[in-house]
Length: 125
Image (tube, rainbow, N blue to C red; front, side):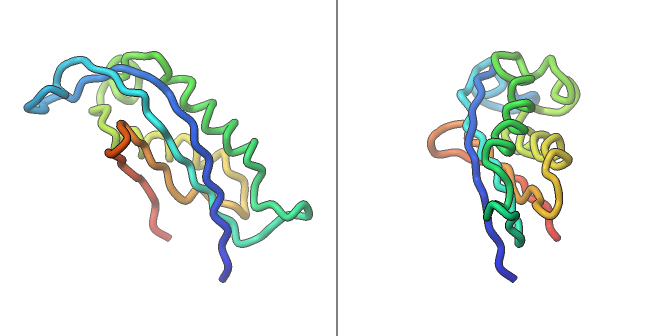
């Protein structure tokens, strides 16, 4: 089966600290995170699109705006869950999954905390 992958990027800036981490990252620090969202679709609509990039970017922006310029350790779910890049990727995935209408589906979220460090979250199936 042919599959089209559509990827958009957005970013947000926020501070966090990693609880129970033995190193500098346990101290309060910030990142300019880059987030990639990939949607896949095996079907194209009458316009020849799997999903409009503008819709994907809008859904991602809605989620990231709630974290932008915040101290992540103080906002749910990161007041109880460590705000690691892995947990950020899963949270963004879970929040965005319902914003992608069938037949398209959210394939992956990648969270870059620096130019050379990235955590990805995907679901099998």
